[in-house]
Length: 303
Picture 1: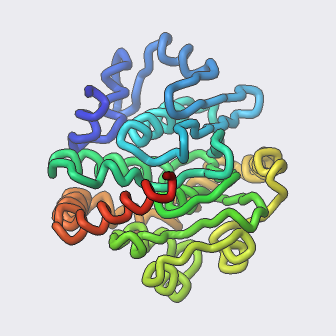
Picture 2: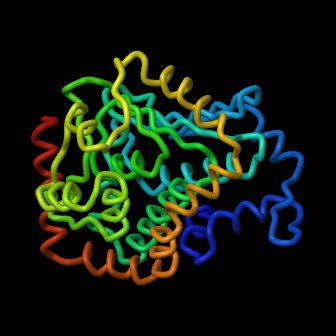
């Protein structure tokens, strides 16, 4: 509950983590030796496993929230804290995100978090979604998505926040923002992220039609950067990371900030309004009905 309360506040997770540290000076966190020691060891948590190799400065973050790594409130909270810890450790220069679940990277936002809940819950959930995007899209670390399965909706958003995307070359897998098919409208910062990735016209068609692309189609429009055999996704991501880390950190980080700052600023200056828009939208009877019908359809498929 303490973690969720931190996400409800206007402050970021830095505020929460600073409570775990012993002091702060000139705006920089001073972290306790205990927390540093914990960070330097490989850690396994309920929904995310982080392995950090100090010799390379690279962490691998594996999603392990069966069955499909849905982005629930608990998952998002844990993800944000994991990224924050890595960001605070100056010896960590890059992170690869991937999945431990077969055939899926992430199925996207957990519909159960958006159906039949209170406005307070919707606010809490949407703030966590925002925080995930801000943490990853604005990270100083090199971020590579090793997409080893399907990645629709929020999974696609998470992939697009990364600096580089490698996807398994399996025609059964798909990736894209398909929110309209569920009766949901992707918010402006989802749209901006995709437009920055594949261009305005491709984004317009993709969002209006709720398109999901197979790997070859995704590569063609620039939604992913590289396709490799399924058993080589993580190895290729590790090899690619060495190329990115060969660039001096300060030059790469300043360039990344220059490219992404305006998109980030649009959300950070408008977070509360964005949250309220989401709450108003998701609370509509028509939207709740659409989500309910979709959930019933999923139940029938599983049955």
